[in-house]
Image (cartoon, rainbow, N blue to C red; front, side, top):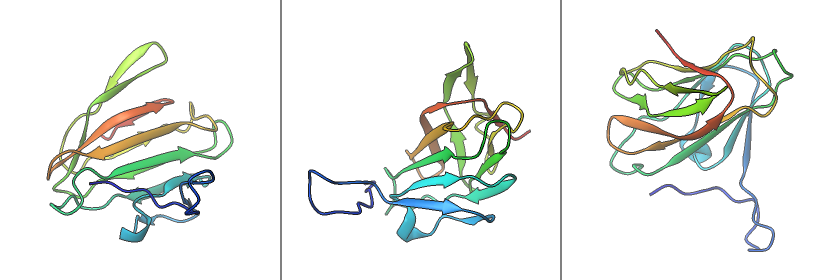
Length: 139
């Protein structure tokens, strides 16, 4: 089951932990429950391999760069894929659902605050729970 990393044990002040990326890299096991913020252009963030121990985990990404500044690439392991879709700019986007293919927040149309949330729903699939902004599947 997915968990969140909170910065306080006080229920009135619970806040989800924040991870900030300035270089390409993978999400560590300890950072799975954090929000993942990307303010640097052209970064690829690798998401964890889905295992029986982490099915149900949710991973939240936010583009914190200036409008039109960031390409944010979310990269699953070769044996995992991103499925599902979201409504964007009055159209519906559906992920390619191909193993190992990235999900990309496109640079030219990126906006500060674009986001996507993924949930591990099987040993091979991350499902798009929701999102905002223009996202594309790697071809």
